[in-house]
Image (cartoon, rainbow, N blue to C red; front, side, top):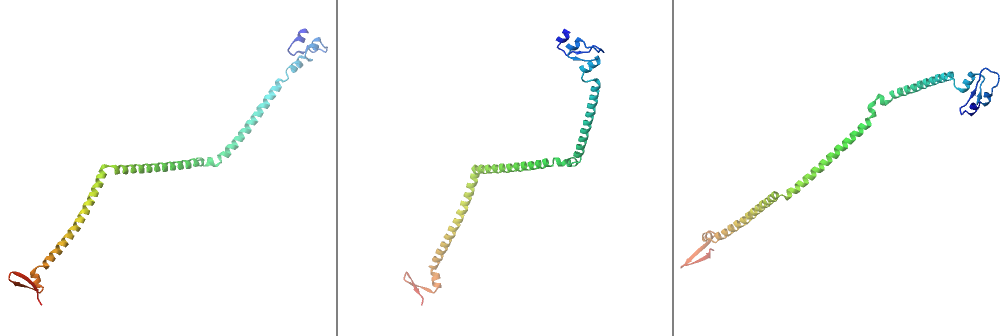
Length: 201
């Protein structure tokens, strides 16, 4: 009795199929008329309850799985009928177009840079040509050739002028020739050793 009272564990009193009340019934935490009833009090969930619960859970899980499977099948059917599955190339058309644009921009940029570098090289080459001694010699030779042409031209002009002057002086001297003077109607009168010119009237 004292041990039942001092026990820290719950105690169910169930002596047997007795109609009398024992002292253990007063100190126990719970009293049952029969051991079976005590077992039922000690075990709130029976084997039948567990089996029923498991069957219910199995049924619920099967229903949930079937519902989930049906939903997934419907979603798959919808996706299989979508444009992306019927025309999968449309999924990456935008990326291909973007890639083409980037390739074109890259090509244009590279070509522009090549042209710019070529122009820069040509400018540097032209500057080097301007500073080259050979080019200076060629320029001086060209200038010398121009000076030669100019000198020849001026010499020809001077020569022509001198020839014209000589011709004019020659004609002036010929005008003083006595034979020509006589031929133009003049006469020569000789008296002693002196010569006189007299106009023929």
